[in-house]
Image (cartoon, rainbow, N blue to C red; front, top):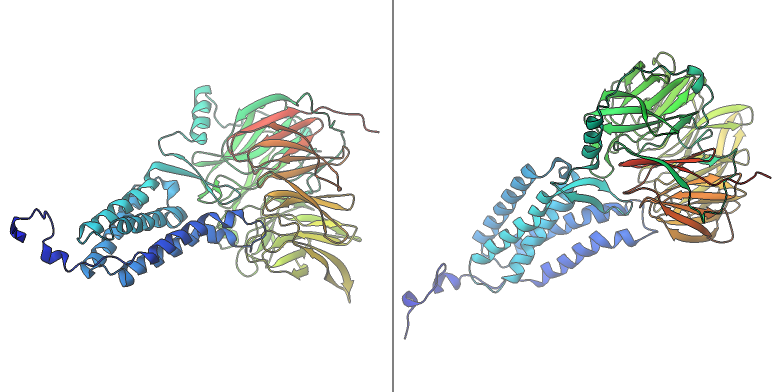
Length: 591
């Protein structure tokens, strides 16, 4: 009979094995299933709570922490295994975090690296649960390193509308790098060696974010609904990252983009796509969910261009050559740090002031600077979570500036910043949408997931403005995807599906067309809607309250497209974080 000394036991003796017990694995099996549910199911829910993305993003981390507690308290592993396993996991995460691409740091560590490492560890020890030796812990750590180490292979460009991260192999050049390399090969460089005529910018056709009235409506030309011959492409160019749209004056386009360590306000020729001038400031903004680059859209007013940098520089430039008139760091003015998604408010210029939301404490929620000098004219309290922009509205004979924040809707007097109406309707997430005034004194407050859209009536009572709820509809829940209104109907995104509701009562007319989280533009004189889908498709819809009627679809851009489309005359301008394109649209005669 053989004894233990003659048996082939390379690591653990029979006596050692007797001190190990099979692991209790039914708990981690259930937890791994919950981790998968937390990651993937929330993205399928169109009518969930406002912060459902938090479940998708951080739910796996929470389950991973519970997995770690199982290992330490309920696994039946020996205490030496538990302690060494814990220390090994910590060492793995430290090494991986030090080595990952910079874009994979921050939230991605919590959203991806740690959950995948903990899930890998659980899978490894589950597979070896009957192995009565310390080797099962080593296997778990090895699989944990593989899981967490996956983060070393990728770079991150932010999330899609469903909160899934957009990633590419770490060694591939980014679209920004390709764009900068192309510019360097051409010898392009920012400069002020041009002097256009200021008169070219006195009456801009599309002066800024969402058009002349900031309502996403194009008027003055009629576009044909017959796209059997697709719109002709006039030009296509690479462009720096950013979620800005275009402002248009004559033959000139203005937008913002990231160029390496510089935030650039750029003037392009609308007819050719050629760069005319670029004015830059040293600033680079990146966050793991929204990605890289500026968020706001420049505004053209009185021969000048006003632009908000994501890190907080509000700049005034001469439109004819891009030379800087003034620049203010709003972080210092408002004594605050950039919001999570960066400063995103497109400047509104009105009656000699330029007004933006900054989200500072106390009286520095919103501010107005002198449009000529950049000096502070007034400031006022406001909700902190807002990624929308001021909207100029007229109530009777009085003009107000309207803004949506996490607290609700706010109207301020542009002359002094006094709050004329603070309509409370709290939303647990950010508001990144525009208020819209309809029927003289009714204000639409579109809001995202879990909250919906509300119509209020504004009345003056004892010299004070009051807002009264007329209806609230959960049939329209846009996230950061603005709505358009015409003919008693409201068109926009109900989460990731396009929809139409009645202005009278908020009831749904129809819902159809999965365009991701894109943007819509109303061609009011044409009875048409143009949707820039999140995947870069350009979709033509009939403005039809009775049914979803898709007339045409073409591929316009490659990559995620969140930027608002612009139509001036028969030209459509569209961009995303990689490229910009101009199409000539077929026209029809206005009756």
